[in-house]
Structure formats: structure tokens, C-alpha cells
Length: 445
Ligand code: GDP
Ligand code: IMO
Ligand code: MG
Image (cartoon, rainbow, N blue to C red; front, top):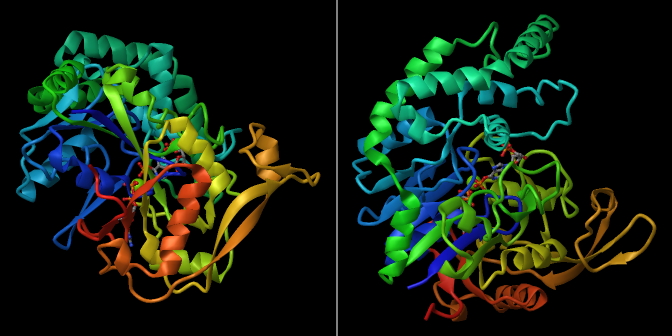
């Protein structure tokens, strides 16, 4: 059985959680390989809504391993909250496995992540303020603290001290800045420290997290190899999406990890030949949370339709998501970046009721040049005007559709247009948030 990667093809929130839960039915392990609790993955089962930030979206299948791979950055406080929430809901976490090599998000990472929001001379990225960027920065600086360090008090204390040494100055400046902003009435942010961060209390807190997490800590790469070698199916669940990729996305308006399929190898510890299938998840339109270019963004009643009907508010931060038409120039780019085998198109039901549906098929640069490809230069992307193909819309409630024959012809034409344009089959179409609210275009063989 193959390794299968499931990844986002836009700016996140495509519905990866639902698709992972669905494709996990015949898998033996579901593995998160990057990102942290900046992710918010939703699964709706029997009317119950589950939102996961760190726990892989396979957790409702209690017989499968749910793995948090080495490439994830873990806020242990948040992870323990999720574990407790699952236990309260009667869902077993017995098969949850956490990589000993995964890096930890520390309280100072969260504090430093607020710095750009406080405009400390930086661009405002509009991050989720979960400490993701600073945690990955420490990993690259070799100042990171790993899950395995939680199990040794002496090492933990030493490493926190080393990591803090380089940050005290920045944290102090942040505190001063915050006091000023508060005085001027410009922020009521409570997450920024007033004073120095306390080494002793962080160490104590993290040791206690370590005690609770110890039973879950495993050599997760080996676990993945065993499953793959035994012919069982392993799903690698992406968080965020290709246009937020640190290398290939709309830098600097990106996250600090690589959400593309190739990163599953690094973030889980498997080889490229272990991944045989890549599923790209694409929303039937486009959304983005936070700052950065978004050529097809709509600031009109159609955008409002998408926002309202699609309930487009962030799963993690509750921020309204920016909405716009599906951008096929960008999708063709991300499909290629991911080596996509199949697409799953979600939220087609949200487009119902629109007279026509537009898709961007090329860009026009400020100088008037026609751009068929996603421009590599950031300044060009910031100033392009999308050119659209306008397709007939469809009406009525399609959430009860289960076969292609049930769908309006215009919806089928839309699916076919997107698929032909990007050159990848759309195998699955979401017509509602529920587990069974799907149309298989061609049943998985
Ligand atoms: P993820 O981060 O990619 O897992 O996506 P999110 O969970 O952040 O956001 C996707 C939202 O769309 C969730 O509220 C899902 O329940 C919902 N959803 C997923 N698929 C569909 C669909 O086909 N139709 C509708 N209406 N909602 C969907
Ligand atoms: P899922 O997995 C949508 C966005 C943030 C911000 C940028 C950087 O649910 O699709 P970060 O906190 O990562 O440093 O923020 O990335 N972002 C997401 N947007 N869905 C996500 O995850 C996101 N994770 C991060 O809004 O613009
Ligand atoms: Mg999300």
C-alpha cells in the first residue's frame, strides 16, 4: 500500500481535515509533517464539529496511528489541551505518537511572534501569533528545544537558558514598546510580557508537560517505515498550503515551514519513493487569512456571498478570511509544485446561487504583458490584474448530491474546466462539510 500525501493548493483552509478523515478510512497511520497549531483542521461527523490544531485528522479512526512527525513544531500546552478535549469527548488517544525529534514552541516564541503585529520595524504578515516563525528560526539556529529534551531536566534547563540568552534584549524591548502602545491606547494585548521571562517557571512547566507527554513519545520515522514496509497505507497530512510555502509561496507573506508534498519526506523521515500519490485539496473558490497578495480577491457582494455561505472565518484565530475567485494560474503552479496526482475540490455547494462563476486564466502585468505563468517576482504578483473566463453558474441546494449525475450540468462543466486547465483529474468534490457530503467523480480504484 502506498504513502499518500494530502496537501493544500491555495492559502490554507481548503478542507484538508475533512479530506484526510475521508481518505484515512483504509490507512493505518496518519502523519502530520509540518506546521504547528497555526493550523486549524475541521472534521464534521454525525453533526459533531471537531477542530484540531496539532492532532492529525485521523484521530476519529481510533484503530489508526496518529503521528506528529519531526517536522512539526509543538506547543505542548496546546497539545495537552487537545488530548484532554478528546478524552472528554470519549475519543481514544492511545494511538497518538509524537516524534522525539519534533521541536517545541516555547512561551518566548509566542511573545516574539507578536512583535510584527506591534510593528517593531517589521512587515505585518498577519501571523496566527502562535510562535511558529520564532520556533522554526530557533530550529535553524540550532537553539531549538526538542520533545526529547523534556525528559531530562538538566538538559532542558541548559537549553532554555541558551535559547533565552539571545532573546532577553528583544523581549525587553518588546515589553517597553508594549507599555508605550498601551499608554497611547493602541493595544490592549495581554500576551506581551511586562518583564523578563522567568527561566525557572518555564522549565518547571515544560517538565510537567514532559511527564504527561512521555507515553506518546516515539521514534515516529521508524513507525512510518514499519507501516509502509508491511504494505499498509500511510497518509501524510499537510497543514497550510503551497502558496504559504516558505520557499515557493508569496514570501514574505508565508508561513515558516514547507507545506508542499515533498516536505513530507523531511517532516516524517521517509524517502521520496515512499510517497506514491499526492492529493491536492482545492476550494471551489479562493480564500486567504492574513496579509499578502491575492490577485482574485473580491471586495463586493460575490465575495460577501462566499464569506457568508462558506462561513469563512479562521478556525484558529476567528479572523474573517478574504475571499475571491478560483485562480487557475496559481493552481496550475501549486499543482506542479506538489506533483499532484489528484485533486479534491471542496465547497462547491458554496458557489450555488451565483449567476456566473469566474476563474482566473491569466494575469495582465501593470505594463500590459500577458502572463500565463505564476510570476516568480513578488512585485509583479502584487500588481497583476487577473483575466477571467466566465462560466455559467448553477442554482439550488447541491448538498444532497452523491453522484455526478445528481449535479447540475453547469457544476460538472465547472469541474471539467478546472481539471482540464490544470491537467489533473478532480476525483472528489465536496458538497457540504459532513463526512458523506461528497461526489466521487471516479471512484478511487
Ligand atoms: P483545513 O485547514 O484545510 O482543514 O480547512 P478548515 O477546517 O480550516 O476550513 C474548511 C471549512 O470548510 C471547515 O469548516 C469545513 O467543515 C468546511 N468544509 C469542508 N469541505 C466542505 C464542503 O465541501 N462544503 C462546505 N460547505 N464546507 C466544507
Ligand atoms: P490550515 O492548516 C490559513 C497564515 C497566517 C499568516 C501566515 C503566517 O488550517 O490551512 P504563521 O502563524 O504560520 O506564521 O502565519 O500564514 N496561516 C494560515 N492560513 N490556514 C492555515 O492553516 C494557516 N496557517 C498559517 O494567517 O498569513
Ligand atoms: Mg484551517
